[in-house]
Image (cartoon, rainbow, N blue to C red):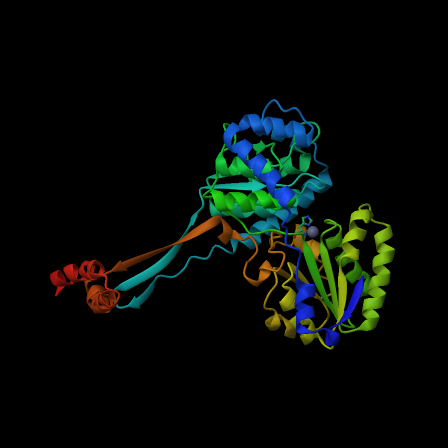
Amino acid sequence: MKIYSYKDLSKQEIESICLRQLEDDATIQDRVKGIVDAVKTDGDKALFSFAKQFDQVELTQLFIGKKEIEEIAASIPAAAKAAIDTAYQNIRTFHAAQANKEEKIETMPGVTCWREARAIDRVGLYIPGGSAVLPSTFLMLGIPAILAGCKEIVVCSPPQKDGKTNCYLAYCALKLGIEKIYLVGGAQAVAAMAYGTESVPKVYKIFGPGNRYVTQAKQLIQSTTMTAIDMPAGPSEVLVLTDETANPSYVASDLLAQAEHGADSQTILVSTSNEIITKTLEQVEIQLKELPRKDVTALAIANSYAVLVKDLEQGMEFSNTYAPEHLILSTDHFEPLIPLIANAGSVFLGNLTPESAGDYASGTNHTLPTSGFAKAYSGVSLDSFVKKITFQHISPKGLENIGNTVEVLAEAEGLRAHRNAVSIRLKDIV
Ligand code: HSO
Ligand code: ZN
């Protein structure tokens, strides 16, 4: 892992080490376009053939229904069932608290404005199932979708080798009251949900992480159909800010947890202490050896770096420029840093708060902006599954109060019909 000293870096160098490699692979783009077009024209037929080609399974049906979900879910080990129950409860509690009813505001006497949330009727959730099957993602997307009141929740996840889904996903579906899982993965799943096929319903917004094909497909359908997406996605990342109060073994474990997601994951260590950097890197080497995914993890660590800063404030300055998906403040002195955080997806405070807690069970959502998008995007929340509609009502008194302002502005814009829409009413009340 490369080590930089902040004081020796120019502004340009800082910006350049904060840059993520944005995916612009023409081969992937072409392949994804081919897949999306095939699903658009051939529907289910294309999905069956892609299942054979990419998942090596010969499906007879593109989904599993309630009965099968119940049967598969029954084989979940007791400990996993209990863990999912606890995570479910915490995620539900945290997201339920996001449903705030907004006040009606009288902007002028007789002019009342307000906003109400309405669920997006049909949403699509993509649950990855390639190198890792992620039931946690099912909970992170399914719970807010249900709480928001989405009427149709379409779930796509690649089929396992047996042409089914695994017991963890089946149990999540059962808990969420979702009665079908479509056995469709990759770019073809995104296309199916964007265009609709004989089996897979078309949705208005697609959520969920995925590999480069899934990400590319989401971007493509966003620009070619009326389908919205949760956010642009890139490889997962963490920035850990530390001082001498950090525990190097804990910090190393957090860096490795992020690194094991994939070779392109980024793990950034920022510290006020040279000693913490050295000890953490030693710990990374020691802990890495024991990991089952050590090959991929080592590649991600090799692509990562450490930055030595003069104090925690300077570390925050760097973090705000980097805008990490996950920011861990591994210091006892995190409190005064909170107001300084400008750009981050989700923040983990203190030495006993591992990112893994948020990945699975504390309650916050793990679908977060990566690649610097934390400068402008929020993570998934209840809000992601609703539209906010504004309302207004004007009383006779209100029209008297606001009428002239609208008339003058309409005239200034040369829009006589706009002015008339007020004048014609004002005439009747004064
Ligand atoms: N860290 C990932 C989420 C995840 N981790 C799922 C484990 N399972 C992106 O925030
Ligand atoms: Zn994770």
